[in-house]
Length: 166
Length: 102
Image (tube, rainbow over all chains, first blue to last red):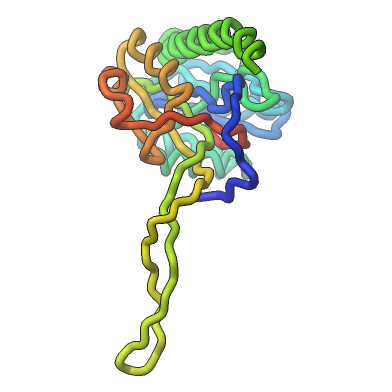
């Protein structure tokens, strides 16, 4: 998919414009955009109970945008079965679009770093077991957060020198 | 499958410019063809790294990809391999700030 550069010029940019996330196929993840917390919680509970997913965490990525990660390890086929079930019953357009994209990639991704003005997703709700896939997800999240912090430190160290050069 | 770290966004890439030309067929119809020229133009494309491996290598490769854009639009690679030979899989450029989906 190519887009017009629209006056793009190479310039010295200290901001990290790319996004860091975690991809895997064995963890059930849901991305609820433009949804109230109450609805996210309802769908997380309903999915967990119907598919016996043991537990979940809800992460708030920005206002009215939430991510859900479930604890039970499943196969990729079962994972997509669950996400498709939620898409069909909730009639959620943004979630359906996200689901289709994950199907194309053959792995589901959730953001960990900042994105434009949106902050890093933070945990707002926990329920049930947290020892399997959630623990693994949080461990990887810690690694990614470490990388972001390291890059941030490097940028802060480099920026005064660059400012004096320009 | 192991978990992978994804770095994704929009990045500039140089692509060949194609020129159109017409050729008259035997049946008299003019058919349009495309010819690859030497000229190149810069376009913005959505690019993605999917890196897996040991945490230490992941750490290094995620820092490396901060200014390394994958040659292919979607690159899945072990961190160890990327650290050994980064110029084989990517080129140095800056990611461009746009709204991308995960």
